[in-house]
Length: 377
Image (tube, rainbow, N blue to C red; front, side, top):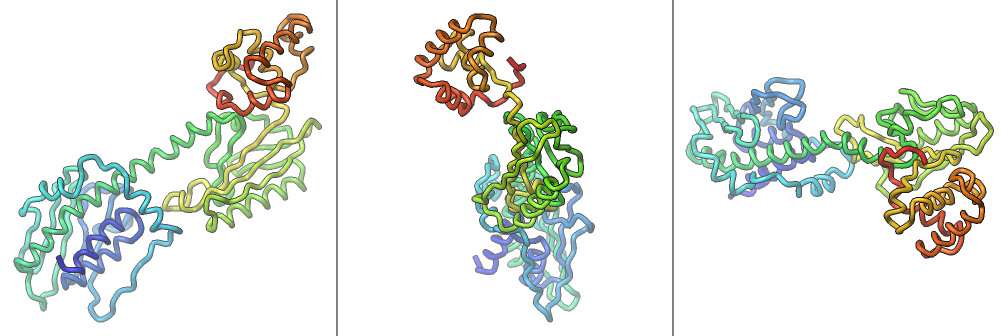
């Protein structure tokens, strides 16, 4: 197989993975097959269609033999690494060998100056690759047919890969939404303009008159000086996003409450640009808001099962984790202080701890605290 044809096959997969543009592929095909125009015809158009420009129908590119077109690079940062990671996706039975057996010689049609690769679309929607030579050029011959026949299964393979990756990308927002609902604190995701694009229910239902206010324009602090500092941190995170790798340090800020109680603790984390969608409209900054005066919705019944506690012991343990005194615990449960002390000793024995701060730390750092909609106990 000619080296140039191998380069074209590699380019086909690069387009499927998003590391090269379809224009670059069309230019390369035009030069290799000495064509006046090369374009793709896709009857079913969608945002996930491969090899098709969203603003033109069909995608066409005239050949310019006198001036080689510059290579068009995808501006996405770390695109090659991202593509290599995405390439290992599962595409069902659409392997290259399987597709080669499925593509027949009738897939390639030649009529003098025009050649087409017509894919039936077993795994994707039907489409055609059209190549047209200038009147001054020789017509397509048997050798050209064989070369185009070689490209056919790779075109279909690439479209299967692209379709699979697009399907996975479309489920990402839903999965993110489900995951952040498990967290026992407010989570707010902002785009690069600082606007809210996703929150969990805890953030959406948080009071908006006690020092922090959340709306579509972002998160605002009621104290002007603190709000300026918060907005500055958000802007810095957005500006640094292009250079973010995954080891980006967190930023923290305290926001005062109007009630005068302990302040909110807001932590900002950069979401690297390589994880955003192609329009760069995805989450850019994550904000985690902790209210030290808000008790976690602690599932004491799960503590009971995990450590072999009785129901009363589990409620005592939960009260300790929430920072309550034994007297407060006794008052809430409805028994004496001495009973609470005895219960606590038994909890120490079952959890292999000996002090209240050890017990509180153990319980606070278990995965039992992820939320499942239990009511406050």
